[in-house]
Image (cartoon, rainbow, N blue to C red; front, side, top):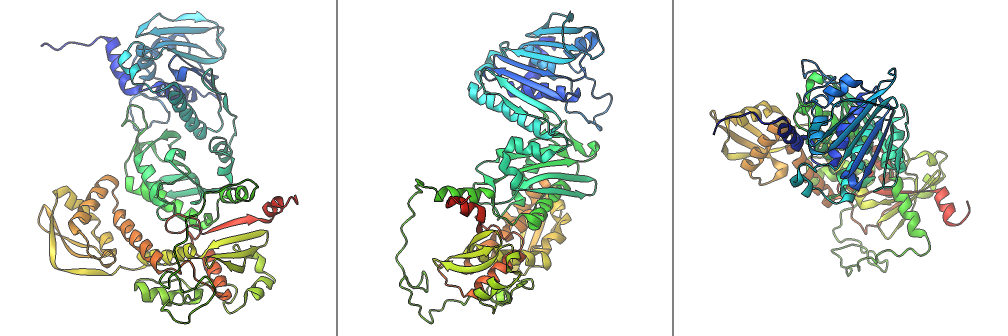
Length: 615
């Protein structure tokens, strides 16, 4: 069989199969073109989920007849010239319009601001009608009808009209967040009108338009830089989370991306602070030299490749954790809203699970109030003695000096009556109810604290600090374990040997294709060294970081902290409650336990007054 040149129409249809996967893909490409043209107003109209109609109207710079003639040809663009090292626009390949025209009925009408009249060109199934004069307002109108009519096989794989309309909505939302100065209007016979007015330089206001007004009250600003990479944006506090990752938005030099490195870094930053199966809400924007990132790795330009992925991942994880430690230890406003709903008449929560029969092993305190004097239950000490107790239990814990502004020996009444008691973020303790919840009075409301969850977080954070402060204890293997690996994996592991040694994993090179494991982290107990080392080699190959070992150690620390914390059902003395609150105020991350559940809920006085009809 001889080699031959494919027809231009077939070439475009092959390209369309990579670039235009569904109507939302076409919408994305056309909106990107409008933004690159400098549009400040973009209107998107759809019908049948974009299958029968998509019309994108913008007030950008427009095109003349000569530009229109070239725009529908493959690899014709005004956005790059000779290199891919300095891409500063959303589009750059020159494939979108000819690809759409090869599988749909495409019409483009455009006019430059200074021209007397506009021009129009049509492409139907890859066949063009030629450019002709047409009346037009300044800007461009692109109309796509009957998408994939020329490729019926692709048409069969489209989802329902509702699903396709939802995908287009998601595209517009991402573009709206990235470009707050642009007004977006999404309308059509298949949807109610969705409008995002321009918010100018107020990026957070645009995020609130897309993510909901609650995001503004539950977000922490991110602003960090490492070497030549800048990270800005907003991340939700851990207690403000969702059931999927659809509310995580990432941008690289203004380009919306769905990059797995960035999403993985966000997940890692919230480890041990969000419940399993829940996802944080975040909007992050990376800015760096275009030469340090490759955007030409995916036909839809959704993925990117960083020259130094380890630096980018470390920047995201570190910046989010620093921001959460700075001001993320607060209860989400949604918790207060849920409490308010629970108090309203007619609320019928699911019946609680029946309580297990009381036994001495479950709690040293009987329901009738009788308190035996000695059942071997370890005494819960106030903040000034947390270190002694934790050190005895775990032998790796170094607690920071307690910052209990109110001396532990003061009574609750004395603490509450102190002139400056109201200035404490978690207030002065007033009572303990059901041997598990501490009720504290603040200046403008009250706080309810889960004592076990709170103390669990305190112990875990102290253990996490110990992980960073010194080399962890290790157990020496009687016979070193030799692990065969590809030579390149051995090279990667040895490049991180010093970092691994700090966490108690000692490795040495053993010939060209193997490493010898001489010590493993004591915290991990009996561990499959071969599996651990191979997992680390895979992680380093993908992310250029060995953070997985630290994550494993932190998971162990979280489990130990859970078992070593003050238990539910433990009756606390007034000074112990006070010490716990003060230690929470001094400990980063204390707003959630190690499993991501909130450690406290806050109810403002104004909310309480509304419950009683006093406001």
